[in-house]
Image (cartoon, rainbow, N blue to C red; front, side, top):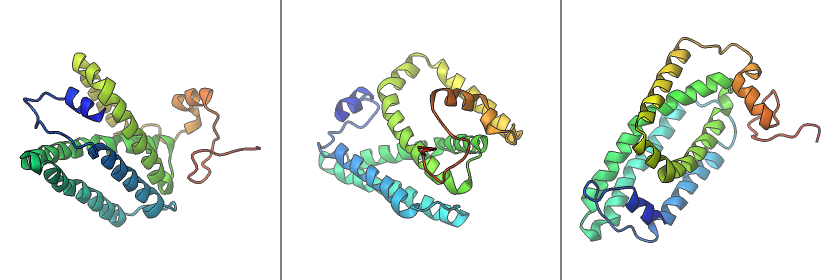
Length: 209
């Protein structure tokens, strides 16, 4: 399935044409799941405020692992005579994705400020947000790319939205207001039962039950 998606989503004249081993995708999923569990259950088992030093160290570790994966790519496709070209293509994609992820940091800062998430709970919120993003990325690869390719003006719409939210957050916005009175919260509560306070870093809580 993954090989079919990989082939359908690329043009052979623009990308390195390789045969991905049958164990390649399952192994990648296992590695990603393991990394997420280590981050959640080892590094951040207890909620705490992350300082600059800790954030810089963890960022260096994860970025280092991402760069080290270039060697894995080179090794996997060396027997096909395309180890170097595959590694260069991966590294180029990784660096592009890393540079484009800056806007994600911006959006998350806006969300944390909007919902007044305590600093000690921001990592857990970010973790599940990234996990959800991985799932949605898979869906977008299957469906979203075709839509954006056909209707390219949507990229302009998204860009305008980011500029608007950026101006709003730099102006300070209405961050001192009551989040419970925000329109997004009212719509959310109309469909999902919720409380007005944080119960530690729990995603679900029970009241009078």
